[in-house]
Image 1 (cartoon, rainbow, N blue to C red):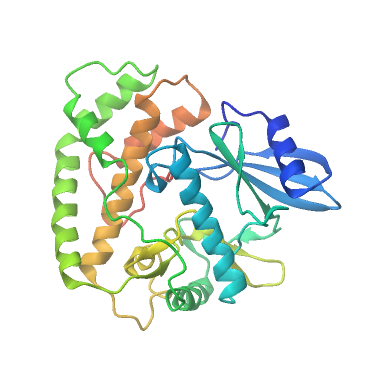
Image 2 (cartoon, one colour):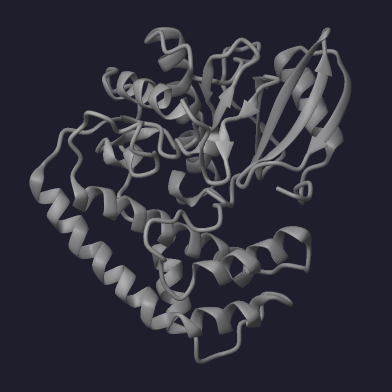
Length: 326
């Protein structure tokens, strides 16, 4: 996120970290990175930490209200801790438990805070893909993940903000008054409305076919793309951003990785396409939600409009979209 969050100050974040994790914070620097959470690099007790703050109004796939989203995010982070400490998956970069053993704490009425070790690694991406050699390593990591006991919660198949997207489609003939970029967003969606409707129809058809096959779900990361894979100074790989962990078909992960990471595996082409379309629908819905609710012109809302323009009117075969706010 390019700008710090509304509704919670850096002072409040630092105080929550000091109280919850017992850190003597010597300094904090906002880090404008990532697409779904807010981050600070924090110095405390002679170490550096990566502090993540989430807006609980913007993670609809985890629950219907703030309490439910908080519980869902805590369950995801608890699952990451279980995968790392209980299942021996050393590549899981999970949170640091607080003094009372919690993976997540409230900071104010609308946000949560979690603390992670700061890893001075590098993202193993080259453009949109993995650097040479990383695909096979990632594939072996995912194979181990998919073979673990079901420590995570099932993840819903339907895009969580599908209802909001359909309401937006129904309101294309009236003014959107959420803010300065609402009307440009309406124009973009109107231009691509027919393509979005075809996308929803195709998604429903694929979902019915995949469900009829009754595949046993496994633990999946949800977003194991190149931007969530770090190469550590020691040479190993880490998977980050575990807020999307959940039980689902292996293809929930595999559609996002290259052929090297899928080497030797049988995949269901329908499931691969289903999860690609789900990603696309999530992105369209998420960016529309930002632009339809009350907002001002900021780097983040301008980014939302720009990326929405790349997502509509229809997918361009095999892409991820332009990023995600999930």
